[in-house]
Length: 136
Image 1 (cartoon, one colour):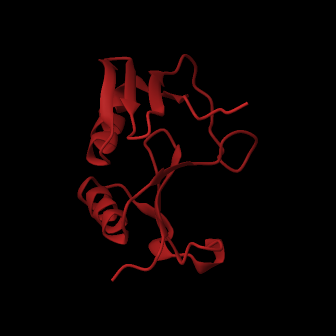
Image 2: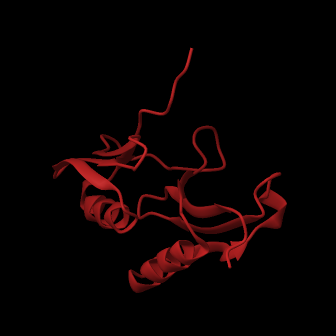
């Protein structure tokens, strides 16, 4: 059997929908469905993220059971830095002293692991990351 990622649904507060629309558009994702309470965005590989208005208020602890974070692959270190600048311009704090290189996360064949981490207004943890060879 061969499978691939189809989509992930993320429940968010309706008043924060524009945050996700603007962020994902900045990151190069394309809208496939845009409604005041549902937003579908597609990445270059066809996988999609669906932001849907949540139905009840619950606390999100990304270190508890469930998803920890959503990682978006960048094509370069410069793209990660551009994301960090975008976040600063939109008053979104970066977390864990990022952006920075994380050699402890590098795997064989990947000489760099460079990331920026941040929380959305709904406390969803995101990572924009470049993993690949050193850039000239």
